[in-house]
Length: 190
Length: 190
DNA sequence: GTATATAATCTAGCATTGCTAGTTTATCAA
DNA sequence: TTGATAAACTAGCAATGCTAGATTATATAC
Image 1 (cartoon, rainbow over the protein chains, first blue to last red):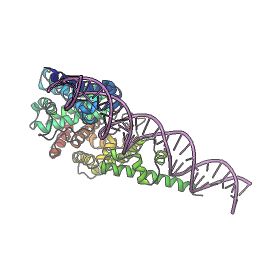
Image 2: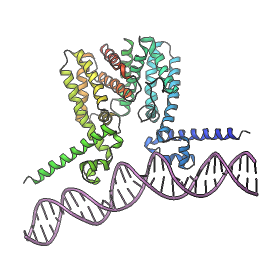
Image 3: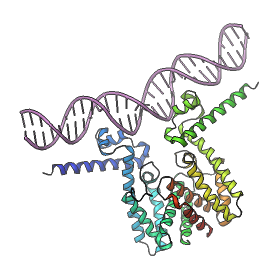
Image 4: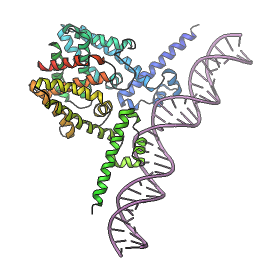
């Protein structure tokens, strides 16, 4: 009897449906437009059904964020693999980071700026998707630095800052490449 | 007849009272606790009075942010003035930046992470307080770089990223100085 | 001093939000 | 077919940003 299995499958699909709707609406109209009522409408169920999948609204943002970390990781890995040498890998990863952040602003917001309970620093409680993302960045940074962890944290922070300040219109969009060059160059000499 | 002057003065005081209450509550309980009703209670007036001072809630956040930029500017200027040489000035400014951001998280959030209409990149519409803050940072960066504007944007972004990632528990707090050293060192060699 | 116009303020309420208690409907095993 | 369990829904609460309309205080004209 595959009844239980079918139910499980349908539940999983519905959960996916919720996060996809959330992500789509967020990317099109901003996270403020992602209300529980709106999501319920979208999946054609009543509001309490949403709460049978997620404890609260933040948990939905968090689910989208985790998906974002997965996609981010494979993009960085792919870019690194396709680069001729470690130096190019670092440059391309930096460029790809900004493209990812500014190309999927709502997804990136879920990952980094919206309040969630996602953490990195604690090795115990950090979700594997987040650790994998960190490792993907560390892989391109490591060849150039003695202490790869500190350098990766710094590299990540610089890219995050560039993405945030550019997204909010605080630095000029047309010299992005020059700023990236500065960050990459600075890291090379350490 | 100083009646109009007295009224003006009282209005200004009340406006200041509102922003101070907002800042205090935000710093103690987070920006979510800063509601219009709460502020009205605090200043002992009814809610619509708040709206006679600020168009909406965001405008209150913005007013706090502008105050933050003023304080930020003078802190950076002071640190720079008190440094023995340009190199030290750069290092101390970087350290002071993080201290400011993490020492006044709600203020910093108003300045950088909460949604406001404050912009930098547009030279026309940028408020003077924001330009002054940028200039204060540019002053410590300029001695080391050909293109000071790009270098300042990059420096600022790196510091902002470090502050944000540390604030949200995504990088380790106990190696802050090492990361700062990397950022400063990287900038020196450009 | 009193009446009147204006400015200042308040009361009351709307619409939207996240979330939930309590009820109804569908599903499955006996 | 029946009874128990699971699934879903209706309805509503409390909090929020914000505002229309009534009310009170204030200043000017007589």
